[in-house]
Image 1 (cartoon, rainbow, N blue to C red):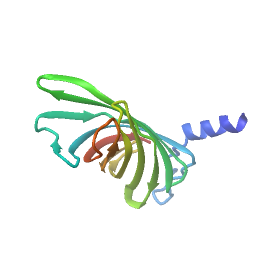
Image 2: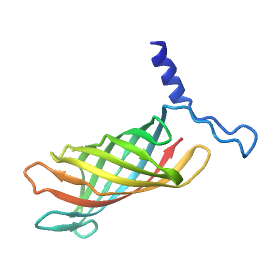
Image 3: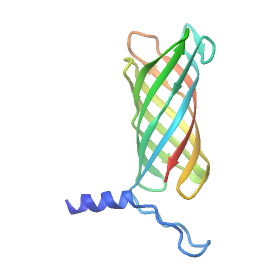
Image 4: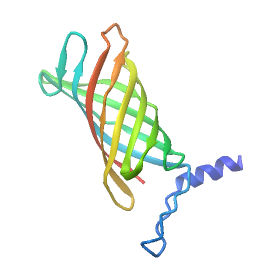
Length: 172
């Protein structure tokens, strides 16, 4: 039990500020938790019979919120929940809720590859590979951009592939 409490406290307070010199590297203790919030714009969705572009006859936007548990500067695990709102013919509604856990593979210069599983309340499921990049950051936050390619099947619909852009803020 003591180990669980120590790991929880370490992850909750894992951001250590730089000490006194600019040449001193930042010490990060792992595991580390990072929360984030963003918005995602589906740009295009395609299946064998049709191509649908966002903004043509309707508008959809997702609002992902998540927690990343970073185990090192190269690897982590992510839990994301995304409600999607769709506006069409002067009405809007929440069209689905997505649960998307995934593996994070981190690289230098703020790049990461994330491979997510995807489970939608609309009955669709699949995977969502994405590339993400930290654009800029400060002492306590990072701003990021991501591009994803959701692949979905299920709910008696044709398999589909899409393209999304995501913009967000992560708390360090």
